[in-house]
Length: 328
Ligand SMILES: Nc1ncnc2c1ncn2[C@@H]1O[C@H](COP(=O)(O)OP(=O)(O)OP(=O)(O)O)[C@@H](O)[C@H]1O
Ligand SMILES: [Mg+2]
Image (tube, rainbow, N blue to C red):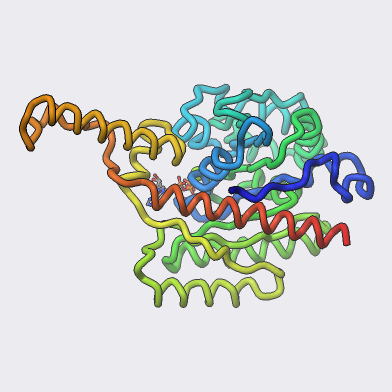
């Protein structure tokens, strides 16, 4: 059973804070300037696992690559136009409802690549990205009553990342265990502390997640987690206990077929049933190549899906603990 967060209506925080902060209090940013460390995979997997008929979840795809929108969720979308208009003119965000049960989406895409150019002239134009993002996101949060909002951010040191760091309530940092990815964590941890000190940002680092990890490399993983925890000292956060294991076959299927981890588990189960049925109909033990299910590479995506399930539980647990601490 997934641990559940209190409903917004029951929150002891809501009465204490201003309406905009209250609306943004379940907004989780997934970020690391380093590319390819699992930001998008983690965002969409967690969102799909937490969302259901009674717990609505919003994914905001704030990446010009639009991988969460197109590759992972298989949505055509508006190429990031609405999010761009919200950032630039505070126009209301367009939300694609129920791209999965209980899961809504603000689409990402190439329109968001214009943010950099806009910020270069912000002093002349009076553009305030942060104010626009806070306002428009708070409006959809208040309207949608989301249990959780997950923002996927792109790689690189974009001005958009700065605005996201100043809007979200929580931060999750995925990393791989190579040196370049770990340096990315250190950079972001510094940036996080700056955002907090400089603007008193409400952002709280929830933890670092090790992604694409080898579950059998226990000594190596232990060392990496220890190094990360000492890197995070002073931030009040630690690594998540759950690691997302390496599974390239499943990763290929998730993207190519636009499946969530649970959908992939179901798809491989029905694909292998169909394969067995064909084999037994043919009355032999070997299938001809064209009879073998070619569309899915993974045979057993259950361990990967279980990792995401455990991470979702940990995430909700940490958010709940923060809310308890804040209301105490
Ligand atoms: N469990 C896994 N094991 C191995 N590779 C994976 C796994 N899950 C996803 N991948 C692959 O790792 C790559 C990076 O993942 P992902 O796109 O989620 O990272 P990202 O941080 O969002 O990247 P970017 O910085 O480009 O936005 C992708 O090719 C993805 O298919
Ligand atoms: Mg990504």
